[in-house]
Image (cartoon, rainbow, N blue to C red; front, side):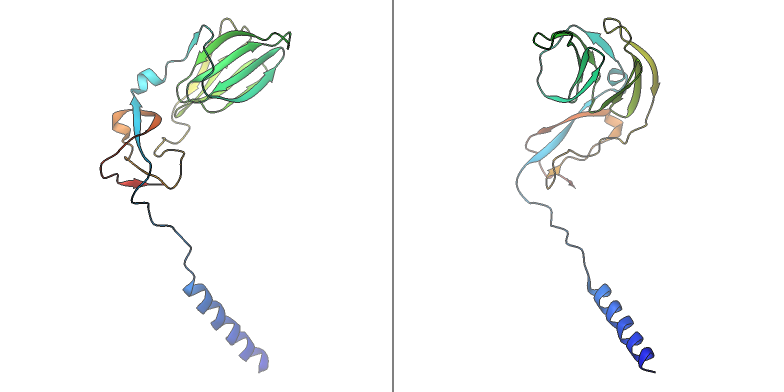
Length: 177
């Protein structure tokens, strides 16, 4: 009998505590930074090109394969650097891949994100990079900026691919992250 009463009290307590719990969610800021998406047509975004070496602007992750360094240029591609002589690294080429954030290499294939697509590139000859395969729409559409607690103009896939977010004044932004 005591167990039944104790069980009933514990059950009632659990229901009361659970029923009153509300996770904290801050209200969207009414002022502060606002962002607007910058679009490019998907046909332009899906163009992967090997270019002459480019200056570093926003270097990200580094991948080492054999004597080469593959350095992510956040949002725009991958630098290839010959590191045969670490005291004198030599820039070899730049692979322009819009929206690129990540890379991985297995054997002579470099895998990279290209906004919403996954591309596989043959890097056996760093002077002659070739697209092996493209898987379209593997990744989610970039519907919001990376910054948090900000208001922004909502992204519209009909306008193209979001290639970056610019901090700017947005009149009456409807989205919040």
